[in-house]
Length: 159
Image 1 (cartoon, rainbow, N blue to C red):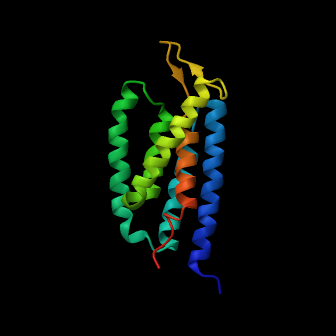
Image 2 (tube, helix red, strand yellow; image 1 turned 45 degrees about the horizontal axis):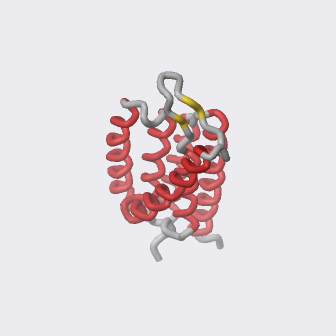
């Protein structure tokens, strides 16, 4: 008999694959589709059910909503893009309060590495038409931080 944790692990593997896809698409096209975001949300719900983490889903939703509301300011100032304002709350939905600190630390590391690589010309970036700011896609850093959070075991189900 296959246990629910085996299915939860499959959901995590599919999620990692989708995060890699999102990172690749954002690197190439600077866009994240709504369908991809909805799929990541659906996988979160499925994972929460299969891994018995569904009791804390309300806290996860509250954290994601708070992050979304916080990011609206940065979006209004054009400091982040529309895809970033969609995928970052979904990442916090996945991490929840329990894994948020680890995720934020990893995100900081990956953003610094990505920014340095873009400034050194090792990765592509775009110049904003309105000003001279350099634009880099944020989804690769978010995806890398969430994948690392998953691989470090922070999202495993309670025993």
